[in-house]
Figure 1 (tube, rainbow, N blue to C red):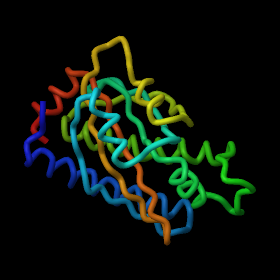
Figure 2 (figure 1 turned 90 degrees about the vertical axis):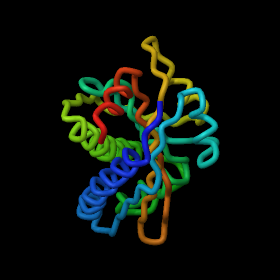
Figure 3 (figure 1 turned 135 degrees about the vertical axis):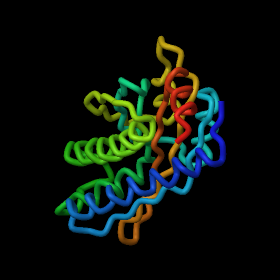
Length: 196
């Protein structure tokens, strides 16, 4: 299963528009300029996901995971390496952190950032597909990339991951993150058939 060039261009442009709105919302929330760009959207088999992501992120990661149901079924994740998680959450802090550790406030901020980004991306997909998408409460995983990918194994057959590379611009910091949609085969087929 693969997207055509036209489908990928449409998805990338749609995500860019959605992320522009999110950047404005996050800027308003934080009082700081936040920009997001989506230069890359790919579909890869789940068994190639680790190799795909390891070229960008390794080691300890922070992953916000949200179960998705309705017209799209699977899991949606925002994955950032630990240093990027520290940089992202620094934007929401009124005072410097005592150590390079994500405290409870940072973890809540990460879940909120993930929730906003994931809802925007999957909202964009549901609009393109003219279907409804339901979400569950976000969960945060602080672990190795391998462990996060392993947690995506499920009883239902899920074979593909939609990977959206997201570059955040936060003043001088440019943390990078990855939005994943780990979708059921039926959801991938519906997405491809919708001809976004």
